[in-house]
Image (cartoon, rainbow, N blue to C red; front, side, top):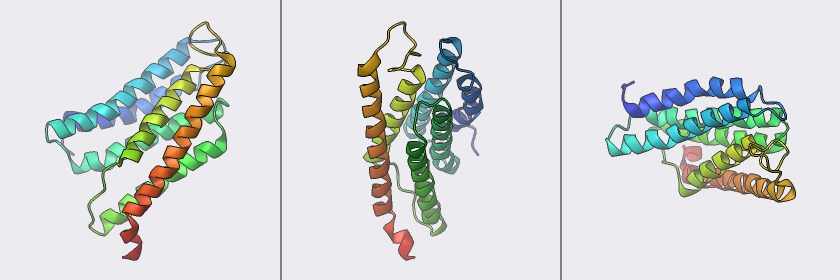
Length: 192
């Protein structure tokens, strides 16, 4: 592994996962310090996802480590957050199962392609939309928007719940559609 900024950002994101979990699993109704700390750590980790790719392309520092570990770090961060949100009863288990199964499926397709000597296909527009929607959904749920636990002393009630529900289902649709797109892109790995 080369020690460059993009790779360090990937490692930082992985290190931030247990820190995020430490704070998020201590959130209780009416207590905002842990919620803010969990939210800040998650946002920093999410920003590092954008920055590592940006710097890798800008400085021509794309590496094999980055190609493999960047998407894995993203999947680990998102999976940890989703499982924590199920634990907090902010998200249904079946939604998280669909999202995590998609991540395993796409990772398996990428590994099969690598094993067959094929180039790893970069994230499609649907993969990027999926990531943005998932991160937005997670951040929104972490704030407690639409619930009495919102970070601000305002209860958005029904409006907040509708917005959160729309975000969840948009994220789910993008997740499933991006899995279909990846499957279509990698269809030749099944024929080998």
